[in-house]
Structure formats: structure tokens, C-alpha cells
Length: 336
Image (cartoon, rainbow, N blue to C red; front, side):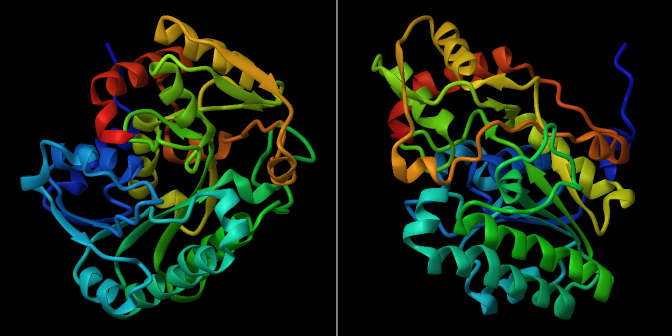
């Protein structure tokens, strides 16, 4: 018999609650919306639907009539203030996630990952001071690990513009808890994968383009290959956001969230080929422009979050890869 976790027993707070999700048509946001619908929440999904980012209406197929969707950019502070009024929960997931794009278009990254975050928090302070906020941060802010596994005490030394702006956005959330009592917390996520992720290119993460090419029967490239990653399946990420929202112990904190047992990229590639029932890949050196912003070996120490939020990932990498292949194979035209 499965023992109900402390977080699961508290999810009843979402029944009838007004919940807003920025980036709500993206991978994590849409999966979170599906779960919250089952919990009886009143949902508002906010997404800019900018083509270069992660929003895809295929992610909410089947639930369009059960959620409200507002196509808005979080950089529009007036629209955000209007939509935040009266909300009980905010899952603040909207972001510019491409590390390469942050280096070529730094102003966009600054506006979305930093300035817009401050405006959102100011709006909450003015029109929704009792709101509970969970902000999506990233392990990228640590930069090249000085030791592994990486815990929250590790120095923050990002290798790209994205990491710098994500630090600022995260710190604004914690500051507004400390200074104004806004119930914020931030989750420093490892690589999230699974249904709903961007697969047409590598803007969201490396596994998306690998998966696309494997399904299409084309070879994919593994850059380096020995660097380890702990991969977080999207359903486990959703559980983490819900657990953070209902855990008062996480308020005011920035916490690591890892995934399954860390694996070298070459093992992840081999696992993908196995899940796909075939495929090929080549190992090559990093292109010079990408080598400068790769963090190398990264293993997450998320023991603090597991203890405070009563959470742990449930999906093995092998299972998650198989589920991802099964999801995308009949839906390729919707994602590429």
C-alpha cells in the first residue's frame, strides 16, 4: 500500500483556489495545469506564445474549455497587475531559457528573467499580498561546479547572461518574502524533460533535439559525453512545485530540485536509443561558442528540499525516456 505523503494530504487547498501559471502553455506549466484541474483549481494560464519559447497549444489539448488562457507577455506590467488581482497561488514559470540566446540577445533575457520578475512581485505586493508564489529558478546559476554534488551553499558563478539574470529574478523573490512577507519560494531545477518540452531545436535543453532526431531516424550529436546530469521527469517536477506551494517550511528559500540517479550524457544517449528501439549518435567536441557556457559535470544535492517538502522523484530515466518517446511519436507534426 502506498503511503500518502505529507504534501499529498495538503493538496486539498487547491480545490476552488484561484491559480495563475505564467508560462502556462509550456512544458511544466501545462503539466501543472493538468494536475491542478484534477485538484479542482480555477486556472488562468498566461503565456506569450513567442515562437522561440516553449509555449505550444498541443500541450493543453483536451482541456482548453476547462482553463482560461491569456496570451500576454510578462513584460506587460499593467496586464500582469490586472490578472494577479485576487489570485491565491502563482506558479511563476515564464522565462527565457536559451543560454545561447541570452548571449546573443541579452536585453531580452534581462527584460524577461529579471525586470519582469520585479514587476510581477511589485504587482503581487499591491494587489495580491497574500498570494503563495513558487518561482522556477535553475541550477545554471551555480556555473561550473567547484564540488559535486552541488548544494545550496555552493557559490553562485554563472557562465552566461541567462544565469546572471536568473539569479536576480530568484533573489527578488526571496527579498520580497524577507522585506514584505510575500509567501515566495524558488526551485533551482535540474534538466526537466518529458511530454510537452520543445523538441524542434535545442533551445530548451539538449534532450529535446536528441529525441526528435531519434524518432525521425536521424543521428544526433553528443557533445563531450562524460559530463553527468540528473534528469527530472516533468511529472516529478510538477509534484515538486505542488509540494513547495503547500509547504510553509519552504517559504523564503531557494532550494535545489534534482532528478533520477545522475548519468553521463553518453549513457542518456544510449538509453534514448534503447527506448526508441533504434537510432545512432556521434560523439564530438563542443563547438567553441557553446563550450564557453557549458557547466560540465553537474550533480544536484537536493536533500534539503526533499526533507522540507516531503518530495522525491518517482520516475527513473529509463521509464521517463520511454514515456517521452511514446508521447511524441504520434504527435511529431504538432511539435516540429
